[in-house]
Structure formats: structure tokens, C-alpha cells
Image (tube, rainbow, N blue to C red):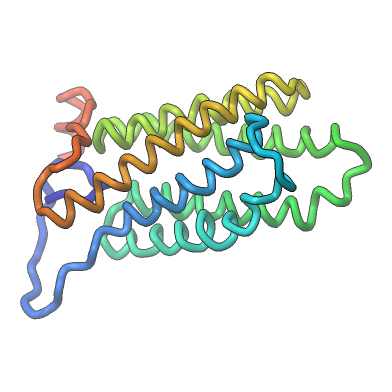
Length: 216
């Protein structure tokens, strides 16, 4: 059975007797991404009434560290998509947390901070664009996560560059949808892995047959 972030194309495997199969780390990585994205997106949408930094600790501990660990474990699974996605977004949350703690305080005004965030989000939008394309080879649930994340990052980097609060709020709303999609995909990975069958729908790859055949 393919793991959550693994293509369904045939892969030659060599079984080593006596060593148990490692658990799929993708549900952990997706859950860590979902929760931290939810907290920050709710703040961006203007729904929270607290300090606005409720997401910060979880950017280091959960969205950052746990997701980075999931990425490292995906290396062991020889899952190039999973290890690249989780390691990168684990680094994103740690880096964003460090920027807020160490970099934002040096800004002379709020416009400098929004400009910095615009460039950061643009860079990750570029990364997410090609990962969105390659998610076509994974499954529909993962595709939805990357598609909604693409829209989130697009709205946020434009909103920060233009210093437009309504675009940032819209990005926050779509970010909550992204978190919901990631939570669903995580839940599917957990229960499908436990049951050994598809209990929750994740869908088949949506790539073109000719392109998929070229990867085999």
C-alpha cells in the first residue's frame, strides 16, 4: 500500500526479513502543517482576538520541528516528494518564526516588515508551484492541499507587497481551507494505514498517462 505522499506507480522493492516496516510519517507532517497553518491563517483572516502570536511557538515545535522530522523520515522511505515537501515547509515555519523573533524588530516601520514577508512568501510560492505540478503524480487529496496552498501564498504575497489588508485577510481564509484539506489528508493517512485499506478517500493520481508512464 502506497504511503500518503507516495506515487502509486510501481516501485521495485527488496524485502529484508526481520526488520519491521517503518510507519508512514506523512500523516504527522500533514497534521503539523495543518495546525500551524490554521493558527496563523485565523490570525491573518482577523478572526483571533489574542496576542496574534499564538502560532509562533507551534511554528518552532510542531509545524517546524515535527514536520522537519517527518521530512527526514521520508528520506528513509525513499519518497522524494514527501521528504522535499515536509523538510521545506518545516524549514519555512522555523524560518518564519526566527524572522518574527530576530528580524522584524529591526524594521523601521511596518511597511518594511510587509515587504520582507512579501518576498518570503513569493519565494515559497515559486517552490509550491512546481510541487503543485508534481502532486499530480501523488493523489487528489495531496493535490487539493497544494492547490489551496498555492492560492493562499499568492494572495498573501500580493497582499503584503501592496500592503492591502483585504487581500491578506482573504489569504487567511483560504489558508484555513488549506489547513482543513491537510488535516483531512492526515486523517486519511492515519486510518487507511491502520486499516490496511482505503477507509477515507484520497483519490488516484491525476497526471497524464504518457507523463506517468515516463516515470516508470
